[in-house]
Length: 307
Image (cartoon, rainbow, N blue to C red; front, side):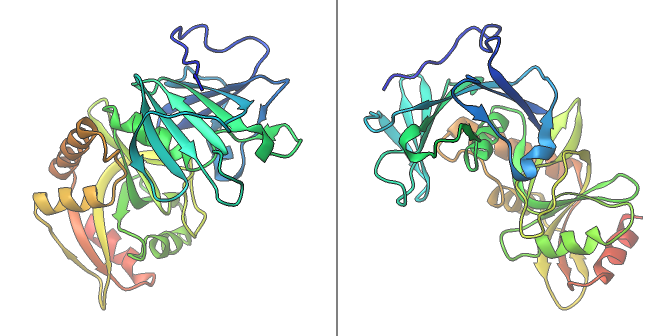
């Protein structure tokens, strides 16, 4: 099935269509659909990231369709779960399946090479008669941001982001079970603290300064905020018997960041950029391994070190 990918930036959004603008990590996504056919609806934590009007970095058109006879070219990645990625000429095509629905994809998203334009098609037979839906429903929204970041904009890290009362950004990095949600809950009880997310943080270099941004993709603490803060320290989490800091080498810090990141692993250029970006972070920001006891004492310990 052929997909329409617009080439005229100014003419992409048509008058009278339904439009929603989302901003995550200073990256704007414009979502458009024919109001008479499909009215997009944002739900959950993503509602915090909706803005009024924007000049989108990526423009996405959504529509109902029939995906029962979709043909694809070369498969370059299979998540082993909901989605697969194909190269289709000069564009990328994501397909999303659910065994509970049927053999046809329930959604397909096609983007041009630099992810500035795209079209999302929802398989109409799988959806109820109501017109409202969120075409960028997870994991597509995160996949889209991941690819936009990999085009030289920054990186998403599996981490908890805490902004202290002085406005300093603390990045607590770790895989599942390392203590990110625990750390977020401990800090959340403190006055003047903002939790940007308890699970996913975006780091970018904006005008020569490293910033950490909140995302709508939270963890079990359900904490997220559409804010940013200067990145001042990085902590690699490890639960232990006492609160203790050690300093990894630069190579170790880069490796730990990369192991907790979300680059497109099938894209060599994106991997090169991501590694270089983490080297930049390791050069510019103090990085520690933090062994901690999961109680309020770790906050005083960190505040004393940061003073």
